[in-house]
Amino acid sequence: MIITGSIAKEKYSNYSNKDTKLSREVKGGNLFRIINGLYETDPNTPGYYLAGSIYGPSYISFEYALSFYGLIPERVSTITSATFNKKKKKQYNNSFGVFTYRDVPTLAYPEEILLKQENGYYYQLASPEKALCDKLYTLKPLNNYANLERMLFSDLRIDYDGFNKLNVEKIEKLSNLYRSTNIYLLARYMKRRNNEQHN
Image 1 (cartoon, rainbow, N blue to C red):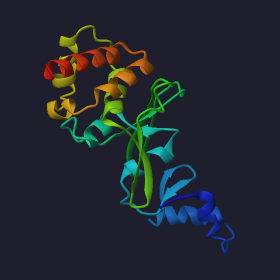
Image 2 (image 1 turned 180 degrees about the horizontal axis):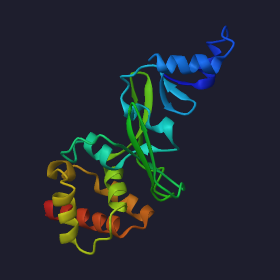
Image 3 (image 1 turned 45 degrees about the vertical axis):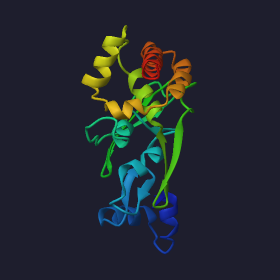
């Protein structure tokens, strides 16, 4: 369970120095620091449960979400999240993992975010389409379908079957919000593939 330092200190009302007691609880392995002022009671809590509490507003996306959905073969240990209007990347390290945060366009930010619940924890996760768009947004502009295919299937190693299950309409809608060459290209490419498969 995530608790704030002030909530923890309320439990120590019988102690004259609540800060010292809090420090002892952390050193004794009874509380686990997430960031300043925020603690977790269970050391085995998966890091992705905590990502939104560390820095936000944010949702899990990029490589971590692509791996989560099985769209890339690699197991991604760094928990990658999207933010907006923060202007610079952030990274936090703690006993639960490595957490990184980077901006996506403000217009695109609120779209295609799924609210998940597991074991009493809530976290926000990009849809598969959004995670792919977020990732492509961070890459250098591509200028043709051949380069896009190389990026998707050779560099990122996107799973073909998973890619074919992505929703073309969602990608098209998102492409108008990023103002990104790569995502416009992706939308056109997917529409063309979709038409070819149905003709």
